[in-house]
Length: 563
Image 1 (cartoon, helix red, strand yellow):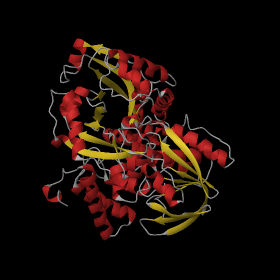
Image 2: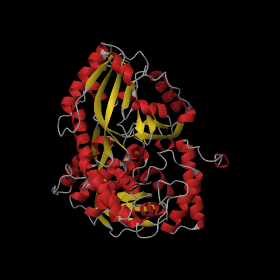
Image 3: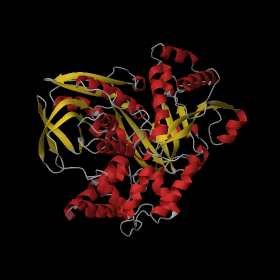
Image 4: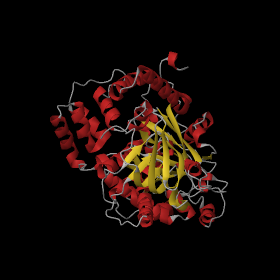
């Protein structure tokens, strides 16, 4: 794949998608599969915003059962099962534990919530949990790939969870899934689309400056270049910015009422051992839901759910961090948690529909597709949705697009592998695949396994690139090599250092970020992208500012902490 183009080859597109979050990139891939010429633009990078800040779960949403959203749960569990098959390199089964504090708690509040009445549900007893998991298993029966639920009591709970509060009398265990790198899956959707259709194009760091009768004026935020394109239909996939995007093309809407979700990545080896590959999904005394599960050799903790007015100013605050650590402390009084355990934090704004609900948790996570017209040009606004159901939303949205353009569907994405999931070997064949990868490119087995873990079957392409010239590990992070960074910079639509550090790789998320590492990577990117020395310095400063101000990264030497 070539680097992100600074000039479009075509001046006309069947569809222009504004917003390269997961809803936008999923639809981009879906429409490319139908042979349409599609332009995807975003004011930032691919999968920034909320798409880079989820709980990293691919789940059916067991809590949606409490509000009677059975259709959403059925769709979510199906899409979860499909993603486990279509993106096995990034989506993995995740055993999930629900701590239970009583036998019959929550029955009356559950009935009230199911009937649409307002009430706080702070206790979900054995009876409610068992009923919910039975229904969850039934709704998730299509394309099932994981075991059913079970309950544990008494001594087995104490044996498995010695540091958990003794107030927990039982645990429920069911299966969902986790996605290690959602940002990469988003990029792979874009890469798939560009390989499927030569008429498709991507413009990152680009804004719409005007629109009139099918004519869009675009401004590249990096180069300042102005371009004009014609489009037959617009899809607004702007997430929390949907209403703002609609205003830019002449529509006045009030579709979004976003809430902020913040997460922590903590370094806590003792908790990591006790989790033993499982997620703990637990209610809090104030009626919220929190979670903790193993992630990148650390523990991911989340999340908050707070209404927010300006998505551009949303960050994980110290107050939110204190709250999440306190909730974790309450569940695990046998451990100690402090701010010093936090190696990374992040925040995103969920693009939920506008609502008057007092409790943000009561706002539906289902999606809505609004149809408006800017003059004679149809404009579809994709409101809501979540990572788990992005393919289903893309399929539904594509059918609307095809109908409006009087085109027919020619292919289905339901059984189609994504990116490095294509040709992915089964469990028994993986060792043989890694050994072949090592032999083919003269790599140590450990290095081949590392590339396979990161890229799936795309590892063959990455390894071939790395083998073209002598390669060596980075001085500041030995798990990556210079040529691997060159590959990502040259081949994966990267325009800024933050694209590579925060989204194409897990360098920042894994807690490995330091100022020296940013400097070394920017030096390599300067070679790959032809930056000037001034641009390189600017990118170092900008990336480190993001790390410190938005993600709480302070693990660099003291002299850099104030930069």
